[in-house]
Length: 287
Image (cartoon, rainbow, N blue to C red; front, side, top):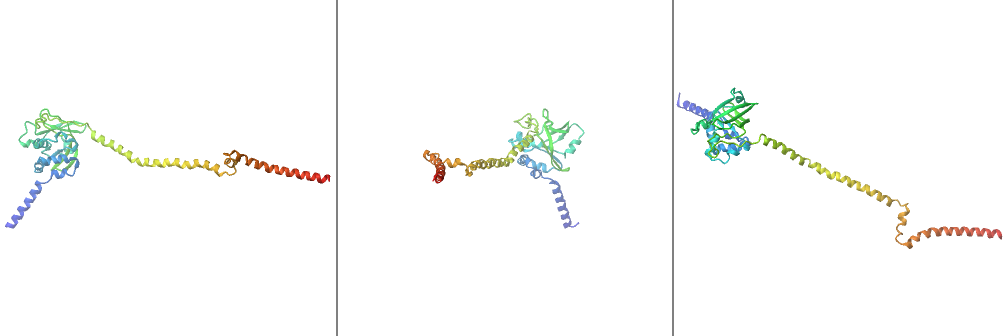
């Protein structure tokens, strides 16, 4: 084999080994899921992502932004120990976890390889209490078992699996400020229940157009107002009525009497003419 062929073979092996060593990138993978941005930031701050990416087979138990309250603000060394307990040195997806026949199983974590784990601090207790639930907790003495498997987030079969758990897992003695590893349990389904309730609150604004239609109904009375004016115009349009004609002279008593005599005088003149004609005929007969 000549030197060129050897160099090409060496380069190919190097590229293959490099690609195999970097089969996944945990921070890049989690960056596609905004709900885990805080957890992803913790992996970067503690540089734990470097140790995760060097592994060929791994399972990460991730916590979403709403559940990181108990580990926020911790010193980086404490935070790294806590997060290392969320990295299982084997590939587990949901199907594989459900297929485990034992009710309780110990899982080895990245914290166990740190050399600082005492007793069983570096192990997780995975338990299936029944009803399809899967719970995780520290295998340390006196640790609680209350971090529940929520769902699968992402996976590349047999390389990396990211599963969401409901609460942080803190082994007793890992955090000096929290020696018992106490985690505040959020009320079940508190956040999911709040979200649907806010949707109905946004629906009344959607009905605002109906409120905008209210002026249309308010215009209906306005349409009735001309109808109310019609009767007022009716008397004004009735010229045959004597009341409007006699009403103008009403303010003056003298003028009020004037129209009445005017009508009676014409009748008197007519009667006088009639009397004159009769008297004339009588006088003609006598003569």
